[in-house]
Image (cartoon, rainbow, N blue to C red; front, side, top):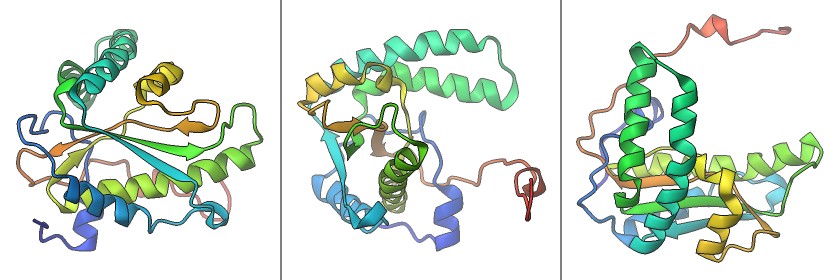
Length: 206
């Protein structure tokens, strides 16, 4: 089922979904493949198409990855200290996701061919410029089909360990995120609060 969203509505209401993920409803493989086909249409540096997506539905593997994710998440939240307002709401949502990430029916791990440690910034930018548009296209396509997603990176602190769990050739492939995917509880998401445009747009000079 596709939601009746205009392009502007899709772009402005694809939110980071942590609390409103339906943990009891499976996500059909054909729906995920539709989203991945659309992800393939994203631009890629030098037409390399050097992206990979590891889709994890196995419960034991999700549980193992969830333990690694929490091992980084909880200390990170503790270092953040007391928060108020929107920061507290986001922190509470991250805690909720940490407690349930192993129950989220699908983990999608975008990857890109090659390793980029200590490489020039131009190469690193090219690498991220290939995989992030594809991953964001996947997330937009998921939103259009009633799925919720969120970009997370906690597991990358133990990337090699996750690579071993999933059989990813660590020396040849870089993981860039872990995207939990589930049907969202309700589809009525609103645009997020953002700073005034003139606080982050620079015309002709900084």
